[in-house]
Image (cartoon, rainbow, N blue to C red; front, side, top):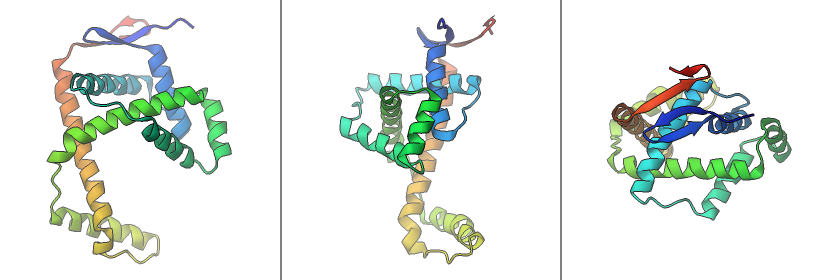
Length: 190
């Protein structure tokens, strides 16, 4: 198959092969993938993050970090055999999985370093999350809820991560609005 341009961001391009690779990775992880247009949007967002991270000379993840993250991906499956079967079904090689994991790790590490310092979580937010999410979830499972003190660190981490995601989403939207982005359909330019 001949590759084609699916989007242009500033003076860079996103190729159909980039879309297919991310689609295959999503198939590996979730057994399904997003629509092509959503994947193109995700790749545009990745371009924005990568460009800023490289401009700020943010360090690439070390091999040990990548190895740990690949191992975490493998462990997310019920068995190594299931992982291997899904990887084969997705059409990805070990090298391609490692490359995608390294990219995802680089981008998420950058976003974390950029937005974590400004994430503010107060005690009331932790208590509300405990009362509205942890306790009802435990009751629905017929279990005793852990104490607030036992849950505090996990809840705080979840709320910080949620705040980082919200900040990153706002930043990406604002940045995207300032960039020249052009998407192409199969029939030609939109």
